[in-house]
Length: 183
Image (cartoon, rainbow, N blue to C red; front, top):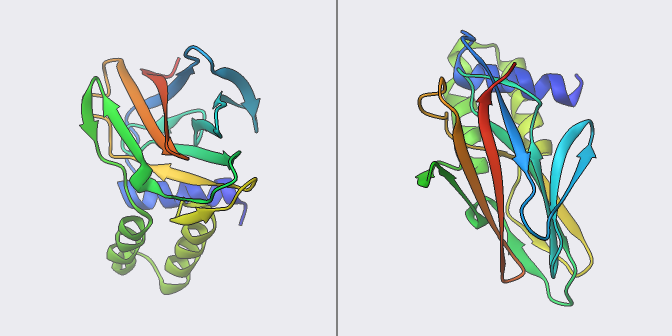
């Protein structure tokens, strides 16, 4: 099963299947950041002691689903550091917003198990295991990354500012996204 398709199916499973609106996350480069294309998706790179890159998990998503980001860190220091979703904060219009841990996502899949067969559940868990950001020690000159899932965006009919703050190697990297209905 192709990784993108598996993630989309997993997202639908976790959120329900009724798509009402198509939404997008538009990354905006702040001072000192660079916008590049990564796998056809606009990505923001923030280079410091640790280089941090973030992009939307997909170009668009359903308002019934949860938005995802792909976060990657490159440790440019001589010291290792721990990195996980605990190092990521999300704010929607200035208000704190839910960032799901790997364990919470696994629990969601297991809660859905009665709705799907056991083989599908194992496939979804396998996708999570290979794609979701998990707690890892990032060694010097090494990189680590994965998908980060956040809670549904309230009142999706209206535009929102989404600020993501990522701590890596003792630094904070701030990113800004415009959350809009897709055209």
